[in-house]
Image: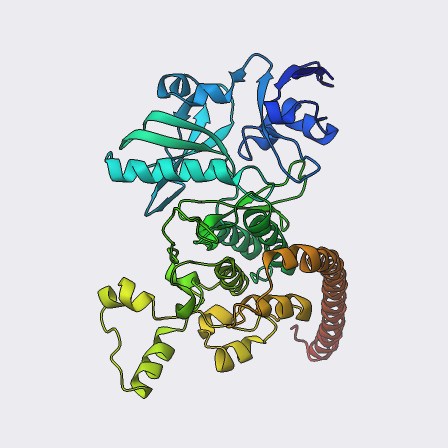
Amino acid sequence: MQNKRTRLKSSTETEGLIAYPAYLQGVELPVAYFALLTKPERHSICTITIMTHLADNRIGPLRVVNDGKMHWTTADLTTFERFSAHFVVVEEPDKLGEGSDGCVRAYKHRHTAHVIAVKHSHKSKKYYDSLILREATNLEKVGLHNNIAFMLALCADFISPTTVGPAIILQLCDLGDITNYAIRWQEQQKRRGKSTRMHEVTVLKLFRDVSLALNHLHNELDTCYVHNDLKPANILALTPPGYEGDGIPIEPIFKVTDFARIAAYPTPPDAKPIEFRGTFEFAPPIVERGAPVRPSADIYSLGATIQAFALSLDKPVATKQTFIAMRKAQGKVYPQTKEEWNSYEWRARREVVARSLSATAKELVENWDVDPADAKDHTPYGGVLNGWYMQLLNPKPNIRPTSAQLKEYVVPILDNQIEIAKHEALAREVFEKVDRIRKEVEARRKGADDFTIESRKRVVNYGEGYGNGEAT
């Protein structure tokens, strides 16, 4: 291997050139990732970069030159003139996502199927541009990690369909955020006639990956950072490199994104303490939302996110009916219009409910404040998953596990449970197949018996009719 770049000769005789950033010099590229170079059509939406895993679990973007069709570096993303020479906006869908800090659109390479994500402001105003610039600065602070969506470049003069200003060029995750992933996976399950309850392997993997991402933010950088807005919309799903399965993978790579609101903890001497600035439906208890926001807030938000994902809940907070009943019992007012329900004041008061994942569908409805429509396809999750998940929602922040404890003690358990859950799922499939075959055989046997009985009846009837000069 040369110092900065290595020429490869693929099995298809396509020559590829890989240029390493400075921090990847001397790192060997795993053979498994050669497929991305020689078969870009299989990974056209996953990412526009080759990703190499380092010993400390970081990843890095690499320049790729393939078959003369794709030739660009991250420097080509820093000005719109150079960017537009390589990429064009994807018209459908119009937007990949949208939040208070900006919106995200997909852009496709002009000569290949590769797609990247671009986050730009809502309006061409200094305030909104400052939000994009702040997030770009935060992404540089966060650095690289396998479970964090990384920035490829910052384009200072980006021209979007609606604005002109700075934009962040990001790795694109093909399965979208975890809400979109869940919708697509459940639609697939419906087509296959199977349960739409989220697969236990997927929930365990989400728990595992986000725990590692939080540990990176809290413990592996020079400064401890609180994400401060962890929720389903800010966790993306990526098809694993080399995935050969049929349909949506049950074990994607989950990546935390949107670092616009990160807060240093403890607060630096020359800075102002930052309070909780995330989404109320995934917020820690009200008493923990003041400044400075602590890493334990991220842990609680992880628990709320896992619950919403596992139980397919839009909001893991108290239902409107329960909230109204509670307010009435306290002799207090409650929201009565749609505008009031959606206001910051009332959204902030509906706190997360620590619901059990191992409860039955009936128990969820009767004891855990879940709407019957949301529980209709639910079956209990395992006790190990539920036990550790409930620890995340402990109302006492000093008892909640830290991200360091999650990495050291819980992630190995989750890895083991993932393997167990996969074997259990395989066993269930075998039993279901055997049961289906048994029922088919019984149905055929019953059909044959019914045919034999009916045939005998016809013979008897025919004989009686023949004797009387009649035919039936």
